[in-house]
Length: 215
Image: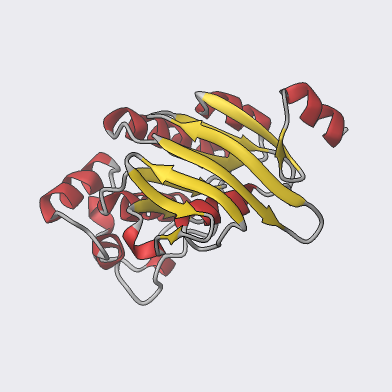
């Protein structure tokens, strides 16, 4: 269980959210600049909230000015929007970076159908392949939670659909809290067990509120 209750002052508004994620996919949905990525960064330890608490299972990751666990000790997987693969490393070295168990990683690559890319570099593979490599790298650390920041935004429609299928299959295999950021409503409805509608740093009551904001 991931529990998030945080406040943080951003340039145009105050981020103030409270939610929890069980072993499910929760989607943060809303327009660009509504605070979605900032929430992920606070959970991951890239950014520090001004106040609040972040708890993952029995571990407090952040609590006001008392606790701030550094990013490398949070055991949280993060798939960035641009995938952030190391360009000078092969696919295998990218995925193996920080891995806990080699046989687990090899099985993971088989599950994601990327074993044949093992010796290639990021510049030599497609966008969909980069996405699967990035997901594999995030899961290779055997995280207790997984964060995905618009991982499908740069993909064409056909590849995006395949990416959706991969994510749902991954979640079925690894039942951990997953938070997905997107501003595509149909994608949110397809992938999310729950959708949190975000506007200017606050969680809205319903989809209707966000639709009114966007119209």
